[in-house]
Length: 153
Ligand code: RB5
Image (spheres, rainbow, N blue to C red):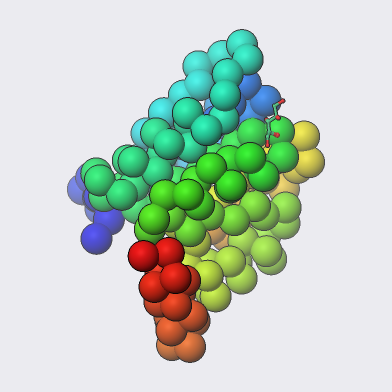
């Protein structure tokens, strides 16, 4: 069940210093498309540790029922590794919209990880919109996700 304010889905953002500027850009764009945004930081370009922000976003999704999260670091990779340690989080790095679409359809990702040093603003936003608008296909893909959860139990 997703947290919804009015008819608006809640999207939680988190980044490290490398992702800060891209996060600011994407939060404004996502808000302009009617989503409610929660900003879990970081708040400037001073060096921080990405796992701290992955944890904030994961906790928010798992315990406060936000629908989806977006994590941004230099590559997206550290964020994905950190976020996937939280049971119930399915995070993937995506570098084009097709990847984000398939990651939603097949993997039901609830966290999109972006790399500010690998994707420009336009491509990153295309990934975000694909992530937000694409539904999970279910079926055989759900069976596979259930196996992942069973293995992590
Ligand atoms: C920070 O320099 C960088 O390591 C971080 O943003 C990220 O790319 C890690 O995966």
